[in-house]
Each structure stands twice: as structure tokens, then as C-alpha cells.
Length: 408
Picture: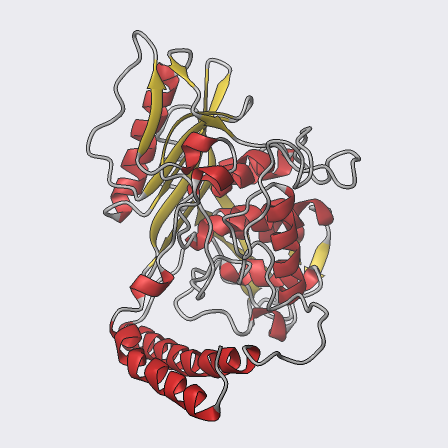
């Protein structure tokens, strides 16, 4: 225990001296982690590193040369996980986080509702964002906005729907609540559109939970399967009439992979590529999520290869885990779209949420009382470390401004 100001000064000086090391290697501080087996949602093997598969006689071999940092193959109906590789690794989700956005907000508005877009609703969208092309002071049907989300991955459409839902902050909090209800404990939501933000992460396992829940909503299923649509355009100054323009789904497997239903792709300059795909064959629907492979094209190739393997392996492998069902609220029926009987945290077989499950920055908690003698040095150390963090953030932002970024 520190008992003097001299000791406190020495400690602060030591931490300050260590800051250059932190600045040189920030990745070592913020690297995503696989949760230990005791806390892995869906089964102990899903918390182990490396490939997890349990083949029976006649089972096909997994595809070779997979480069994804994390992937998972599961049955959408039963929830059985057929194979996985680091499925709980926490990584930036890019625009695949829009799956959770849709699962949260889609049930709230009738598709025929008409909304006039105010200028502030399409401001403060991250530079380099993918946009569908919404204009202020024009009317849009809700179904058009959702096509903008699913086909064009439009961050402008996400922002408009978020304002309709009460604002960005409220929508982010509701998305976090929805993730926790689905037991997606690897996910932390900072932006509703999946735009790269410090601290925003998800996992292949969680994204599969979101897709499975979303596909139970017929509107979600329709939107994510739509290949092309017409989107309302601007007013013609000469005729006063409003035109339209065509938009196409950015999912490069849709219409090419047999039986593909959707769901959502995501690519950012900083986060790499991520894809969640669902396909149906002979009455079976499989989900595959691939996160951060070696290249943009590989995310589609590896998803297709894993879908092929999953359909060939069905019935020839023992599941290595499962996609859990939605938590019950206060012992009652599950809320939202996803059904299930799994109990709340604390029930047998249900791990407690990790510390980051709730966004504490937007959810004030009570507190009070002074700090003990150990507390003040802790605050001092925290202040010094925070100063280093500020420098890191500024350097990262400066790098982004220099090189630019792309969001999809």
C-alpha cells in the first residue's frame, strides 16, 4: 500500500515512463481474445482455439487453406454447430452489424409508413460510408429505407431509421439490449451502422445468432434476399416530378450460390471483410459466418466452400456446440423474434455476461463514497494511462484522415 506522496509520485513517474512502450505496440493492449471454455456460450469446445469438428464415418474433410481469422457453420433450425474456428474471437464486424440493427428496429415500423427526412438525420455520417443516396426534405417509405440498408448497405438509411426510432444513442442502447437478450456476449455496439469505432466488436458466433433471429422475421428474409430494386430519387427541377434509380445488392453470392437466402456482407478499410450467409438445400438451412479472411474475395469463396461442406457433412458429424436461444425475461416468454427456452444468466448452462456486455458509457450507474488510500493512486495511474490513450486515438484519427477509409 502506498503511504506517502513521494511513493505516489514515483509510481506515476514509472507509469509515465512506460507510456512510450504502449504507444509503440498498442495492438498488444487491445487484441481481441477468445473467452476461456468456462465462459464460452454454446458449449465448451466453442471456447477452445483452433478448428473444432467431430467427424463420423464418411464425413467429408473441411476445405483446405481457409484464411478467415474466425468462422462457424451452423444449422439455422436446430442451432447445432457443425464446425467452427475461433467462433468467439472478438473482431470489428463492419456492416454485418446491420443484421443486429435490423433485428432490433425492423419490427417497429410498418413498411408502408412514409417519413420525410430532415437535414439533421443524414448529417454526421462517417466519411467514406456506403450510401444509398437519401436527400433531405423528401418523403421515403419505410420499405425503401430498408432496401437501402440491405442492398446498398446505406449508412444514410440506417441513420434515418435510427432517428425515427428516437435517435442514435437510443438505437445503440436498444441494439445492445437485443444482443444481450440473444446471449451475444461478445458484442459491443458503438454505432448502429457498423462503421469502424474504437471498442466496437462482435464475433462469428454472435453474428450467426443475429442472422438466425433475423431470418425468423419474414420482412427481414425478404429484404436480405432482394437482388435489385428501384430507389426514390430527387425531384426534377424542370418537371417537378420525382425520379428513381436502380440499386443492387452488394452480396456477391446472391443469385450465384444455389439456394442462397442472403444475409449480409461487410467490408471496411480498417476491419477487413466479414460475411454472414444463409442457404437452403433439401429442406435444411445452414448459416456460415466468416470474419477477416486474407482478402475481400476470399470472404465469399470461403463462405461458399463452408456451405458446400456443411450440406455434405450434415448427419455425418457430431455437433461441437449450439447456437443458444433467446433469454427469457423474468421467467416469461422470450421477447422479440427469436424463440427458445434457455434461462436468464445464472441458470444452469448459461454463462454470466462478460464485463463489457453493457455499454457503460451510455448507461449511467449509481455510486458514491470516497476513495480509500489505495484508490487515489489508482486514479492517478488511470489518468496517466488515459493521457496515453488520447495520444493513440489522435494518431489513429490522423492516419485515417491521411489514407482515407471505405465502409460497406
